[in-house]
Structures are given as structure tokens and as C-alpha cells.
Image (cartoon, rainbow, N blue to C red; front, top):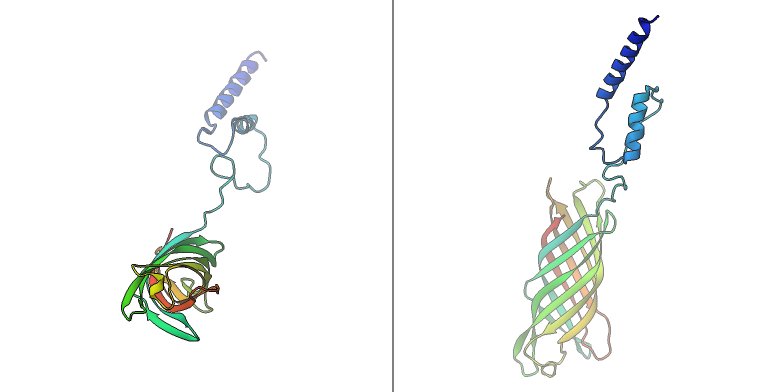
Length: 240
């Protein structure tokens, strides 16, 4: 009996040492605090049976919960040209063709198929003066709005029909005075915008190409020149 007792103690010490040597290193386990790590190690040392059931996923990071995924944003640079029809008064209109210009938009996704946008467009428009001479005015448009990116039935998920709508502010400036024109454009003009087009994404790329037919019309304001325009836009989009 005296020989058996020391042998039993020796085996117990060896088993305990083996268990301690096989414990996992939890220093890199950032999802647990020190309390959870200590309880887990104590459980391993106790040789308690593992409870039955499924293992649940552990949140990554620092344990504060995973951040919501960021919604995609995009920037668009396009060439555009449009024809402007100006209300000359007395039921008469005057059609003016603008020069080709640039349109820069930036926006993001509200939902997967709803986007918002804001940007700036610049071109020049010619207009006849009362003395018969002709001058060109700088035209800056500041649009903002929403667009729907709809996937037609039976087409790849990289093709979209775009429906765009919003408001804009148009600003005209130049060397001539308002008194030089029968229907002066100089100054700010609020308007509403509509557009329809098509967009497709290059395979395995963040780049897309789009083309739209777009129009705008000023809000009625007493004593102010009214006009509307129709044009086309074509350019590239980068999503990030």
C-alpha cells in the first residue's frame, strides 16, 4: 500500500503536466476578454465532458460587433450636348444649340437599385443680341437627384436601365448685359430634370459606361426668362 500511493501521485502529476503543456495559446484571440479566456482554460483543465450541440460563429474584430457593410459610391465623368429652346415672349421661341461640355457627378447607393447624385455641368450657349450681333454665354448647371438602376428581365446583372430625376440650378454669365437681349438668360434659373438611359459594367471591373437622353425645364417665375433643353450624355463611371 505504501508503494502504490507514491506511484499514483506521480502519475497524476505527469497527467496534469501533460494537460498544461497542451493548453492553447489565447493571446491572439481578440474576440474574448481575459475573463472568458481564463474560464475556457479552467474548463480544459477540469477534463469535463464537452457539451453536445452546434458551435455558434464568433464575431470578429475586437468583440464590439461587426460594422455594417459600406454602401458603394461612384464618380462619373461624361461629355454632353443639348439644344435649348428659349421663350422669346409673345408665344415665340428661339432654339439655341449649346457647345459640347463636361458633366461631373458623384453619388452613392441608397439601396442596391436606388442611387443619389450631385454634380456640375459646364458648356456654352450662343444668343443673338438686339443689335443683331451674336455672343456666347457660359452655362453652369448644378444638378442633384435620384436615379433608379433597373435590370431588364432576361439580361445580365451588369446591364441597367437608368431612370434619373431631380432638380438643378442653371447660371449664365458673359460680357453682355441683360438689356442687350430680348430674352436675357444671365443669372440663376431653378429647373427640374428628367433622364432615361442605359448603363453596362465591364466584366470583373469597377468601371461602367452609360449613355442617357436628358432634359430640363425651368420653374415658372413671373418676369424671368423661361427655357427648356434636351440633350444626350455619354461617359464613364467608376465605383469604389
